[in-house]
Image (cartoon, rainbow, N blue to C red; front, side, top):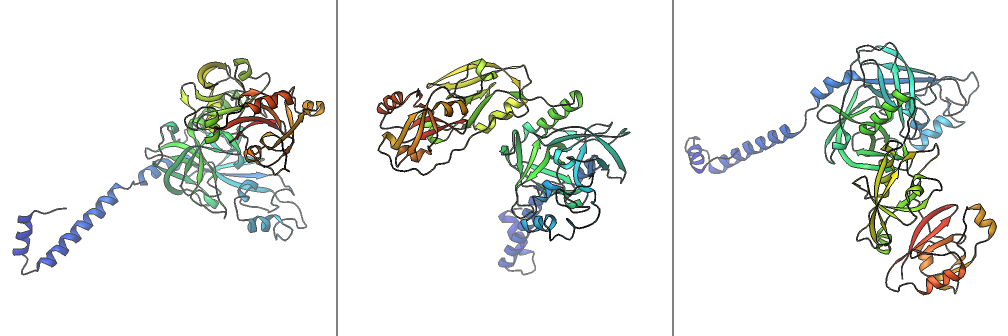
Length: 491
């Protein structure tokens, strides 16, 4: 709120003798009140959103048959996965022999757990987390009007931590509105409704902190990271945008204390609905499979492969008989694009492949020998134990060696080759101070390639090493405990 010079003079002359200082203070106060009101009006109001959607959010309670395994706490409000999110002291309290609840004489008690969920169809389909209902013999869904309805398990997908329930005799139930998680932006307001610690219909709000997060336990889910307060019991509940649309399913928290620490993770609703549709229609989830082992491209690897900056997913190994092998992909290729979408991090690739329907053809842009090329690959079905993930190397200390690069190598023993399904390479027997030790090469590693040149024998190893450039980093492909990784040696 600003006033003109003439208005100011008028105010002074009509203020009954007020001093100029007093008038200035009054004007400043008016201005501050106006700024405060404007700021308040700019903050979102969640009341209408909560009122419109609370009825479609449900509390889920489960009961499992008596068991001596797990926490041993009769009537415990947390299952094993939720218990692991509590401080270590409390975990031991509920699990250990000193617990007043578990491991005591008397009949074993049924194990109970709780979580959240939301209704996605009027006939009673409910989405929640797999870990909320895992091992349950009885599932009860409680609605906002306090009705308690039995539910059956339609199917689960442990890889994405998803479960689909069906409320028995469900008819004309309230449902949420499904949004698009692909339209989310970092910094956008989001809101969660759930039952933390059993407190039904608790509302918490925050912003999207990051997108496409990859977690060690779920490589095929590009998690939404938020700072919304999520605690045990929120699992399976919806994450809303300001339009009242569900954009995620709250799934995990990062904590060292057992409480909320500002880092929460949600399953994107686009991925969740894909899982839901497959479970509802087919009873199982089929994911796309490429058949490669990949790793991150760091700065040194980018330099050794001729990339201007670190990006893409480096293929460390192509599995025998896989779609990748059939399409002509090779170890050392760097996947830069998948069906036109940029692959910035290695963790970007598995969700892209997983979302592709089995049998579809995808076009990959790869970097090979310093030039880009396109390859078409027919995506296969992910095996039950299939996995595509980065492999993290770790350096080991070795004794001194006068060999080139600080490496001592010998021909690959036949029994060693058979155990790791290799037909060529050299076995590292010693690692001394030098580029190899700094790169993280260890004794008992098998070197199969240096600077994109194959290494099949000790003689080839010496020839390749003698011709290495003196002024740039070079890549080394090693097989360690049956898995291939790329390391970088710097001059």
